[in-house]
Image (cartoon, rainbow, N blue to C red; front, side):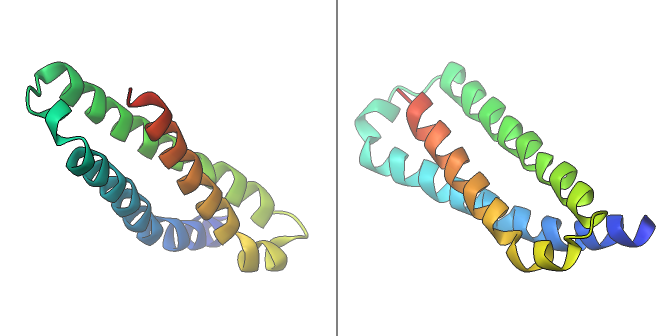
Length: 103
């Protein structure tokens, strides 16, 4: 079990940087293209953005649940080749949720 957990951490934690970078770029793009709405920025939207960032990282951790469960099954080798799909789908979902809730 220790090896599976260590391998999961080795896979997911470096990719958390990519996940957060993609989300940060989306936020910067929205801010740049809607700068007039950001000119009167107060603590309320900033606090909301911080809460969304924290929620996005908590949800990122759900990948561990799936990863550990599948790694303990007979599908471990196939899973290791295709778990990037979970990363891509989660990143797309996070971007979609952000864009849907920004208005």
